Amino acid sequence: MSETVEPARNEVARLRPAVQGIPAATDHSARRALLDAALEVFTERGYADASPTEIAARSGIPVGSLFHHYGGKRGLYLELWEEFREEQERRTAGVLAEARGRGVEDPIALFVEGARAYLEGAWENRRIGRLLVENDGPAGFDALRRQWDRAWVRRNARLLEVDERRRAGRVRVIVLTTVIGGAARELGDCADEAEVREIVDEVCGILSHLSASPG
Image (cartoon, rainbow, N blue to C red; front, top):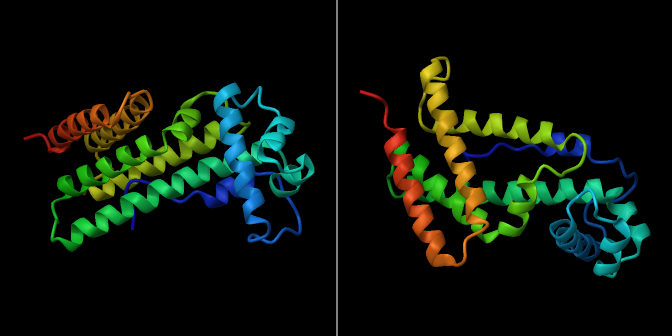
C-alpha cells in the first residue's frame, strides 16, 4: 500500500513505442546498460539534444539493440521515469507499513513519515530526479506527469482522511503535495547529507504544521 504515489504502468506503456516479440526478461544486462547510459547522456545534454548513437556507444551496446529494446530514446526516458516512480512507491509503502506495524495510526504522523521517505528517496536518486523536473522530455510526458500529480494528491487526501469534496480540504492537500515536490527538487542541489537532513527535518516540520485541520 502506498498513499503518496499511484501506479502509471499502463500510461507509460501506451506512450512508449511498441516493440514486438521481445520477452520482458530478455537481455536484462543490456537493458540496464542502456538505461544507465541514457541517464548519463540525458543529464549532460538534455533529452532534446541526446543522441541514441551516443547512448549506445556509452553503454557498449549496439544502437540497433537500443531500438530493439526501447524503440529509441523516448522509450528509454519513459522507462527511467517509471523506475524512479516505482522505487519511490516501494520506499514509501515500506515506511508506511512499518509505521502502522509500530501502532502509528494518526493520519498526520503517517503522512509526514511517508513524505520523509519520499524526500530521502529523491536525494538518493537525485540525478534522475533532477532530469525529470526539467521541461525537456518526450512528447506526451507532461500530460503523464500531470496525471500522476493528480493521483498523488488523491492518495495524500485519503492518507490524511481529507474530504476532497470540500474545496478547502482539497486545496490544503494540493498545497502539501506541492511543498513535498518543491522540496524534492531542492534536494537535488544539496551539497551533502547533513544539508539534506536539515532540509528534510525542516520540511517535515512545515508539513506537520500545515496538515492540521483549521480550528
